[in-house]
Image 1: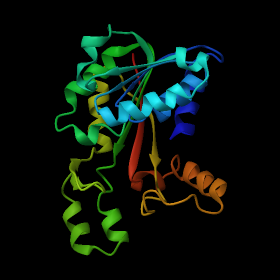
Image 2 (image 1 turned 120 degrees about the horizontal axis):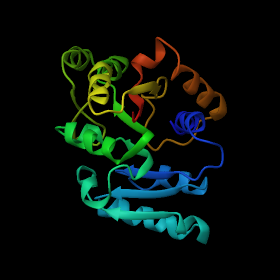
Image 3 (image 1 turned 60 degrees about the horizontal axis):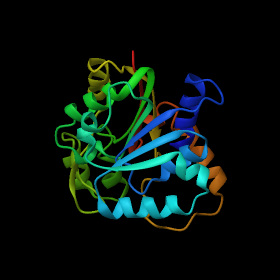
Image 4 (image 1 turned 90 degrees about the vertical axis):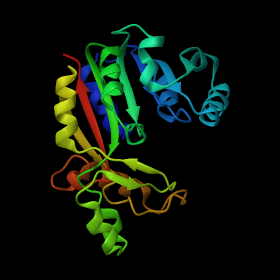
Length: 233
């Protein structure tokens, strides 16, 4: 996903330009820190205290120049309008958040308002068109059958959450003025891997295969996650 995001940034903005980046639901700050290291000015929004603590600890270990380029705001992603003026950012990330939001439309609209004209919106969501694949590959036939006609599922943390279908999100992005520019699949071949497992042998080849599949039909359509990139008109 990071490679996909870098591709979109490189294709849309001048080389060397310091971008204003907003990472909504930044978690432990992995992408926020990575972009700050690349020279961008990054603001991360997160409401979970444990994640904020982890992000601050990681930030504290960075050189001073990187620490100065990143700030952390404690808050809910649905309240971006409380903290920031419209059009304040060139890039807005919202990765792995929508599945926890029962009604995502206000959140999406708020994210689009944060973008300057021509700005990039990067969403990572659970693929609602491929929910049956994981239980099917595990031989859970009843679970696979039950997954075809729903966007609701139970994740690996045991939480009841929701997925998004590509066609539905495409229409929503058009409706909020940040129409879909391109999309990728994420975790095409590796979705059944155990969480926390050590990096496998041949990691470079694995990543190359995932990256190729994530941009190639029909593989990307059955990925566990979708990475959608919209552009503010």
